[in-house]
Length: 177
Image (tube, rainbow, N blue to C red; front, side, top):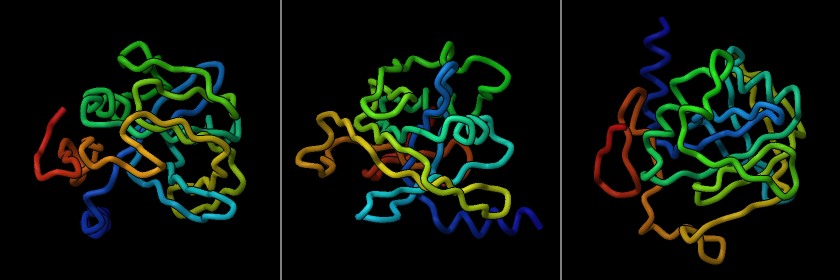
């Protein structure tokens, strides 16, 4: 029965892939595809995190998170962040990412990412085996991949083409970590 559910979800792919930063004292980075805009006013987004994930407990604990937007150059770190468990080891020691102080939340941002959306949790919605954390976007920092608030499609944003080691970008190229 589980494989039928996975097969149905495959029809939603490819999806943009993001890095979710959570935790303050021992920050953790997790890869997530299930990120969705929810409202213009107030500016809200949602991120669905599995109950068993370490990130889930960190977001519940501190009530904040950062959604970081990677490009294909960070694919190895994106893969590691999604396959290693921060509960079992310090993921940051295995990643070549630099955590920097955020402007409006205690959770750090990622220097190498093209955007960091700093969020405060305003609602939690239980959705089966995941919680949809609704975050109000308090501040955004961005790099050259965004001009006037719009993405420059010449940058290759990471997209998960399907479950597993199958990534693409906003081009027709395929990549593996």
